[in-house]
Amino acid sequence: MQDFAGKLAVITGGASGVGRSLAFALGAEGAKVLIADVDKTALANTEQALKDKGIEVHTSVCDVTQQQSLNDLAAKAFDELGGAHLVFANAGVAAGEAGPLWGYSDNDWKWCFDVNFWGVVNTVNAFMPKLMAQAASDEQESHMMITGSGNGAFLVYPDQPVYSATKAAVQAVTEALYQQMAIAQSKVKIHALFPGPHIVDTGIFDSDRVRPDHFAKAADAPDSGIRTTEDLRELMESYGAELKTTHPDEVAQTALQGIRDDRFWVVEWNEQTREKVETRMQSILNKTNPIPATLG
Image (tube, rainbow, N blue to C red; front, side, top):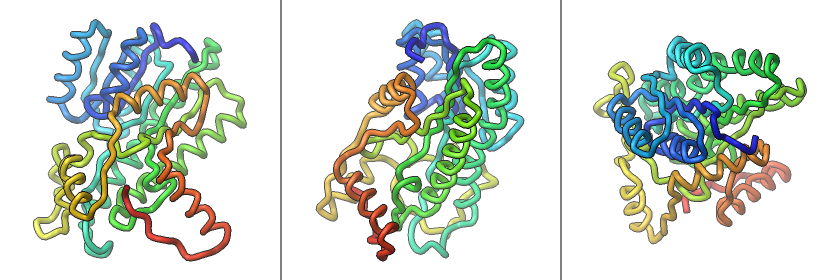
């Protein structure tokens, strides 16, 4: 797909971060956008900002942890808005885990998996049957892009095992879905998006702002204390390390180019991360003990 004009793009987690930037990037190319998010205030603010740019925008309050919520979103896209040819399974959270793995709150595990992993599965369940049926009827290609993370898919960091585990699971699902579509020679194309090449400056560090009460963190549970990218920057600088960041708008452009190029692996490497991934792969192939990965 080279031209996004007139296409409807559905974006979960569309009110902030990478999802918000995707909406603006696609809208600038003439696409219509249906942004879905659990954060009602951010959703309204982003809707108005998109309208101010002259972009056709539709919104839906959507909880990706609930299959029915995704089913309703898919129904809106296909039954009310005429069908979608771009679906971005993008919603994600960070649990803010800290300390030894056995000391984490059960709710950290459950909430992060509910959003990051089950949110993807629920999106696939809701949209893939409709995308497949649409492809069979109009012979037009469509695209589903799933936002993963190199943290889990490529590397495992010792201080973020909850998040890493969810993204490792997401990558397994994404790659299996791609292979199924490739074997079927389907016109529904699957892409794995890895935001980067550096840590992306989004609100994911403050995910607790949308954390539901039934997944509340216990008062005595270890917490990273990191709420913003600046918090992480200050922490790394205290250890003499530099934090480089990437703006979500850059990730959005990478995503659109990945679709144009029909690439599964939609990733921009920085030299340090690429070296760490190569080191890990060699460790696996040579059966040498892994070296703990560090940020930066």
